[in-house]
Length: 231
Ligand SMILES: C[S@@+](CC[C@H](N)C(=O)[O-])C[C@H]1O[C@@H](n2cnc3c(N)ncnc32)[C@H](O)[C@@H]1O
Image 1 (cartoon, rainbow, N blue to C red):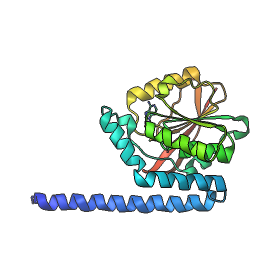
Image 2 (cartoon, rainbow, N blue to C red):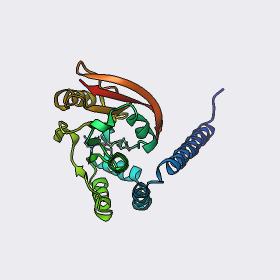
Image 3 (spheres, protein in one colour):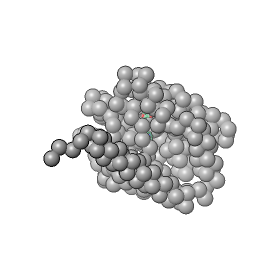
Image 4 (cartoon, helix red, strand yellow):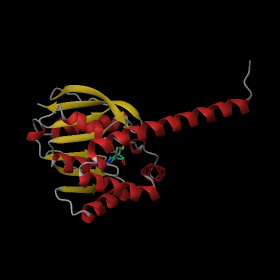
């Protein structure tokens, strides 16, 4: 039996609505978990509220989409966010006491870089192509007089990774060419005993070994987070 196109469109719309509503509930649930777990820290709470204020006017997904449309629709610019909860779980598997410098490749609004600076007292550097994210994050640094954290508006291929003890990258939407180039860069530049936390892609090489894989929540759903170590 052939389904009339009006009915087919209606089914598609209902399905999309269902996905949107369930995703909102999912993200709301993890938001509550994070409030309970991390808002005891007044600095983290203040920064998160400031991020909410800034992005309630023009949200981060709209900003990233607009930038993507004006820049040859690069797939690498697809936006999504890691949760503090997931990063905090991953940190338990690394020797954080030996780490000083945290590098976030594609930091978006900077929420993870702020977290690593405040919760783990690391020197944080967030790098992103989208100027609006970097300007807003730098305003937060000034407003709260934060130390040992900076945000740079740059392509990560123009940054040398050798200072980093921990690199975090959400690699879910990166294309094969970008993944290959990043793998080479990690292999050549990262120092011995540094860590890579990578969402969705294991950057394993002869010199980079996987410690473990965790399945954790992100803004788009659950994904594998690979924890790797440079030999
Ligand atoms: C999936 S979002 C991740 C945001 C953040 N790391 C998080 O997990 O919450 C990826 C970010 O990487 C940035 N990005 C993509 N390619 C980049 C490149 N070559 N150099 C710098 N930033 C890049 C995008 O602008 C986007 O903000």
